[in-house]
Structure formats: structure tokens, C-alpha cells
Image (cartoon, rainbow, N blue to C red; front, side, top):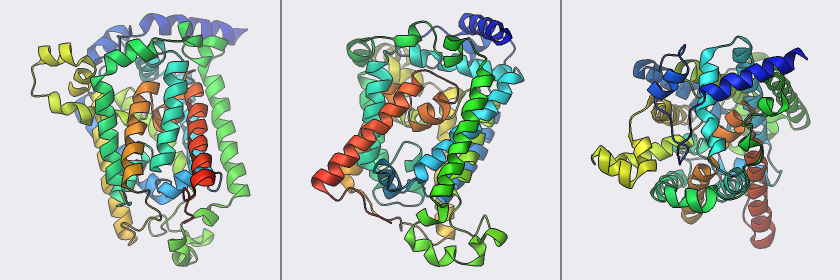
Length: 426
């Protein structure tokens, strides 16, 4: 069939142009990527910062208005008491997959460059020791902390209780992983089967079907999932109770909806807005959405005053993140802007610090530490694997995401029904 010939040629070109993975699955430099994809110029710092700030505005706005960042929304999802997180997830993955399918059909070179950049994520780790174990621990960390690496930044901006401790725990988790990356690679990630990644990294390569065909189908299925969830569980029924009065006012009525003054949006719509950011990320920065790398960069910058030779020899994993690179550092402006926007939204709605149910300092810190350590082990966070990896059909992401939900559900059920007090309805 025609698509099999197209996919075969695409696979050959992708494999030939891919960046050879290093021991740790490092971030290729702009020059390395460009040398293998001659039609793509490296991203400039100026446009990277501009795009990151603009995307951070939309990211912070969408996460605040959906209220998916609130700890009890996340914990409630793992007990199937709340479905805000799943609605955002489906909306973001669906819109992102369709947008990326269009880029693929248009043969936009930045899309191929970005996929090559992500290839080492799969080739440097076994599927059991990487995405399965890392995803399970990431989900456990989400349930414990009531956060994820992206959502916690919006939570911090809105002054959600204990969110600062989750961020501190995340930085410690990233630092702990970075200091021991070599040992972790040898003792954990190199063990176990590579699975399909030993031959094909992406599902379209494995199946011999064009990427855009599969991605478009995935996107439509996810958006259909949004419609089903919103039909079964109307979005207004899940808005935090503190907004009941304003949600009944004209600014939130269907025929006079005010997107700025209504304190909540349909989560599926907010998710679609997040998913649309994939276009800017690919076209300008030549990578895909994620947020955990911001923690790794932040946990690595302390070593910048050290000599390049010393840090590259003693701490090679941390060194690559401490070295300025727009394809990694863009997340600093992205998440930093999201914090500011979430703060502004919460202030506008007189909602600073009013989110229901903080998880407590020990859970926030330990959960945050586990979140980031597991994200690095598994090769991605909820955004990296869930929104981006699945949308680009990275096979290991389709292992990591079910493992993440399994880890979160296991902790939630054991905690709620074994100890009690895990979930506090808002």
C-alpha cells in the first residue's frame, strides 16, 4: 500500500538523521541537530524567549481557569471522584495530536527535527526500568503531593497551600537524580528489555503507517472522549464550591459567558488551549511540550561557576542542563510566566490561597521529590509523556502513561480506604 511505502521512506530518513544517544540520553546541542537536519536553523534565543513567554501566558491561564492544579482535583481523579484532570488531558492530547498531524502532512522540517531530538528518550532506557517503573513512581508522587511538575507551578502562583514545598521537593528530586545519573543508568535503566525501542521508537515506524494518519485518528478519539466526559459529568458540577455564587451569575451563563471574569472554564476547552501550544513549541523551539526539564535546569544551575572541564567530568548529567541551550532552558520562561499569570488570575478572582485541601508539608515535599526523580527515570513527566510523547506516538510513552495512572490509583486506594483522609471534596 502507498502509506507503507511512505512510512518506510520516512522511517529510513528519520533513522539516518537522528542524533546518536549519549549515555544519559542527553539534550543534543542546536548545532548537532542542525548538522543532521540541514533545512532547520537552530532556534534563536530571542524568539525562544518570546514564544516561551507567550505560551506561558496561555498555559497559566488555562491551568488556573480549569482548576486542575488544585490538589484535591488531582487526588480525586485517582479515586474517580473528579474528572477534571482527565478532561484536560484528553483535550490537550487530542488538539496537540491533530496539530502535529497537520505539521507532519505539511512536511514541516521542525517537526522531524523535534522527533529526532526525543528519540534518545526511548533508546537509552529499558521499557520496564524506564517508563514502566518511572511512570508508576511518578503517579505515586502525583497522588501523594496532589500535583504534577506542570500543575504545581500554577498552584504556586495561586498560592495553593503547600505548593512551595512540592516545588522544593521537586528540585531536590531532580538534583538527587542528576548527582547519581551514571549509577542509575548502569544499575537500572540499562537493565531489562528495550522492547520495540530496540528497532522502532515510534508507533508509525513499527506499524508502517504514516504518522499523520495515526495521529489524526488519535486526536479525534481524544476529543470524542472530551465530549463523552463533558456530557456525562457537566463541567460546572466539578467547579470548586467556593465559586458557587459567581458561577450562577450572568458572567458564567452560557449565553453571556465572560471568559475573563468567570473564574472557571470547561476543562476540555482549557486542555485544547494547552494542546495548541504544541504548534509554537515545535515551530519556534523545535521540541515538544514538557515542564520537568525546568526543574532539572534549576537544580543544575548551581554548578555554573565551576569550570566546564570539571563539571563535565564529575557531573556530566547536570553539566548538560547547566549549559545554556534554548531547547532545554525555554521551560524556565514558560513555567515562570505561568506562575505570574496564575497569580494574576487568582488575585483577580479574590482566590489567592483559597484552594481546598492542602496535602501537608511532608506529603508535599516527599511527593514533589518523587515526582521529579521518577520523571527523570521514566524519561518524561505528565506533560512530556502524556501530552507530547503519546501525541507523537512514542512507544515508551504509551507504557509510561498507563503506569502513571496505575501508580496514582494504587496510592489513592490504599490511602483512602486503608488510612483515610486522602481526598477532601472541594
